[in-house]
Image (cartoon, rainbow, N blue to C red; front, side):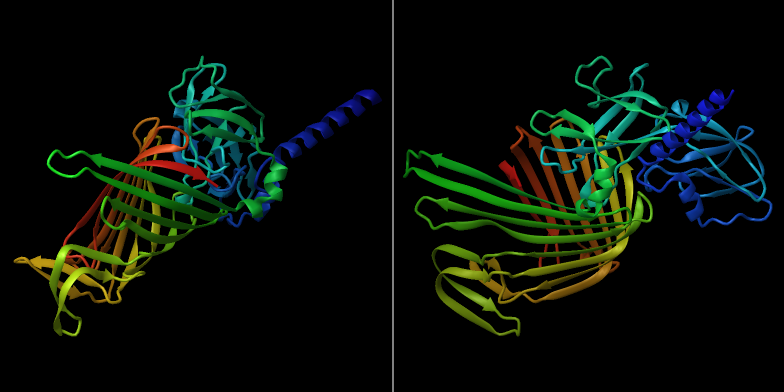
Length: 504
């Protein structure tokens, strides 16, 4: 009899230690610690239901029903006051039919802690450089083959966090979207009751396949969380074009166009705060036979964004943009020209016999844009992601010795430009669409409304269609539209670039 009691005691101790070990895999405090930290008060005549969270703020909500009637929906980690009685809770990821139910009694004046016997799964999608990428995957039940839906890598520019799956314990397959249950290109994972499983899924941008799937150690994550909250990546890319022509009535001609782009993105991300700094430097030149080297592309830009996360899809933002050019803007003429120049103070003079004229020096114009408001995710799906930001914005354009060149009745006239400043309501629409496995469309529309008159509205609309040819070669189709205080009309820019990229 004594031996039986000892064995029962040992089993009880082992079961308690196992439960503790399961909660030790969470990225949140243990369930009882969460309950103690919960600030929700119990109203008179009610009880409180508390469902602990395995991760912070990105788990699917659960439904609370009584007698088949929906009472409330809630997110794990927050206490919910309820009338005394028995309730049915519906948990889990996937379709409604795939969710699992739990029955729980609520007593007046008492806190009821739900001990989770379901499993949690977090998957980070990374590329070969260990950078988070917005690639999708699909989760299949290893027994039945049914799908539980699509998962996504995060888009760092938007301050997103990785989704947490809540599933029944068991074995699951992770595959590319559209792959069948019988494919050999799959990764399997065993999910245990009450435990959080974290995995890194490695995406090869060259082949478009997943090439690795391995655990992300919780101890490692906790030890280096402060270090990994900051990440930086630099991309160096270039494009070149050589044109030749053989003219029967003239000389043979040749021209060379080339561009170089340096792109750096540095971000800081925690559970509540997200900050991103993006630096773009793009320079290009054209050399035609018999002519001097000319600037074709000149762009220097710094974008900074800060988002305070109030929820996974909603929060205030603060942003700033600085744009300029690094080299002067020059106009060249085939023969010497007389140019009438109108200065900012109204004085008019004439420049005689000019075959070249500087329209703007280096670092002019210098444009600043600032904004503050609310950031919200509109759509989050495999083919389409869309964010909108609404707030108050301002724009300042500083110019120095800069002119606009016009041709009127064959006469070339220049007018000195003035610095401008505008304030109003701003709206930003940020979108990326996955048109196929190797084709992505990125679009960003930035609108500043300074008055009720639409003629006073300024905007930039940047569009880039990227076709991946290999892991380091892309075909980029660029189409941009812009209207600002220094332009009389909308200005467009189109490019077709074959880019060779290298990441650091």
